[in-house]
Image 1: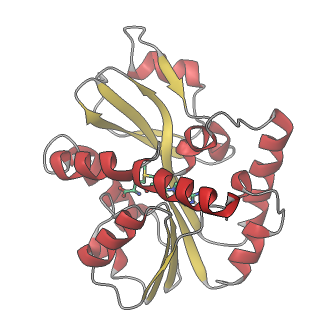
Image 2: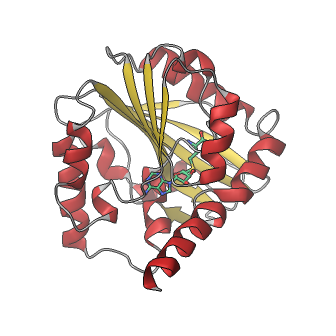
Length: 247
Ligand SMILES: C[S@@+](CC[C@H](N)C(=O)[O-])C[C@H]1O[C@@H](n2cnc3c(N)ncnc32)[C@H](O)[C@@H]1O
């Protein structure tokens, strides 16, 4: 009984969850050729030019249907593994892209925030020793995905430390929400930071009219790493400042 409930909840979450699902696909189909275009161009430029993994295998966490991922980028790889719990996203992805070898994984508990098992992420990475890893606009969704079950500061710090340590020696990259706001941003150009400003400073920079800023808890990913930032206007009066970090 409990097992059925868990399955139902996870399918329900994947289809209508806080970080994707039907609403996300419908918005992507409606906006990707107009309002999303500048953001999608930024992601494309970064994936094709700024991140240069020297591997022929790629894991994409949170691929969704690949709305922000260009085919030219996927063409670089002989084997692609998408980790994506949303069944509709997996179905659309397999139909949108031509990949030499594509594997779909549906687990939602591989990352350290979503499992009590300290080996889960490192065991998964050990199973794909030659793969670069791309976190595709997922890490800024963690607070949403944890819902009411926010981690304590110490569990949060432990998960972040595990994440960075498990990825050591591997080529990885992430684009993720830094802050968001129910406003349009004044800044449209890409900005490069050798040291990322604080969330308050970013809020003042991107939304100087003093609107309420949502902090997506991702500044830790930029520790000691240069970061570029671009605005993703998801819909009128809803913008996200997205960070791009690569190793
Ligand atoms: C904002 S969307 C990503 C956008 C996507 N990369 C694109 O190109 O359109 C976040 C994605 O992460 C997926 N996701 C949610 N929880 C996850 C988990 N624990 N592991 C991997 N992916 C997850 C969601 O299903 C959703 O498709």
